[in-house]
Image (cartoon, rainbow, N blue to C red; front, side):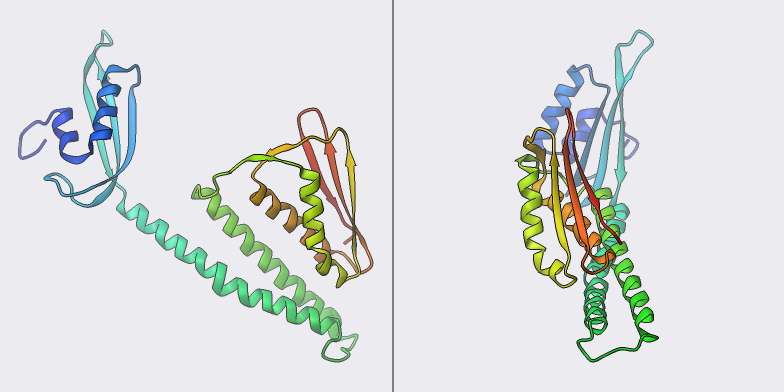
Length: 245
């Protein structure tokens, strides 16, 4: 209703949405669907001005299931968007302002424990090792928070394509060779079953495998072995990590 005047469905939609969506609404009226939903930014009209909205249209049927009218809900989501921006800013702070010094602390503690700045006492060594483990845990938790945020915000849309998971794991292991050499560690790759290509997001699954391998290395002692087992079954590929930390 505008200034005491009842508005029809098309009087409302004509004033706030574009031609393409109007055509979809016309098709909706003639279809079997009962609900239509859009996310819109409404600009320069008599009803709303320059605000993001959730736009819902529901059909109203009479007792004989004939179309009687429409219920339109226009929800202002400006504050919701502001909250998301604030959350994104918070995540950026964690990503850059916290993770960078954490990485630096981890590397410095590793150098100290490897006696790069001189011998350390047996009394001090367990304290530094505990501090290093705490820094690694904080870094791990920050990574998990970033992944959780991206998933909740639907920013991680998977781009799947066929690839060899065996070759993918081999490539990642080769890139980690320098990291493993610091602790004189090695990786043993075990493959079981009939090897077939898999349909995955190569970039995202590479992050998973890389992080698992690094975690296995960090939590394992020197001169140890990390076993990566790839098992092909009828419907699945199971990738498992075994370390001796």
